[in-house]
Length: 83
Image (tube, rainbow, N blue to C red; front, side):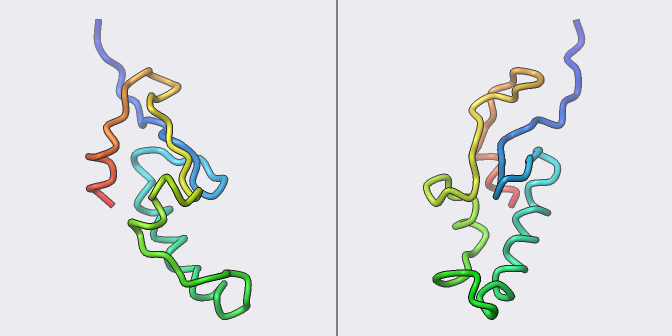
């Protein structure tokens, strides 16, 4: 049986669905908008870098251990290296 190609659904980043293919784009867009939020007083504290945004402990990224569509175990080390 052939394994289907799946763009694994890996979690939520600031409330938006994130797939393997678009995580870098979404992290970059959050990183770019933060200085604007800081200028208008919406962002408390300092803008975060990419590694801080994807840090699971900060609450921006909610990670899944497995893809809910294909059941593949997600290798977070390799996903985060590509950001």
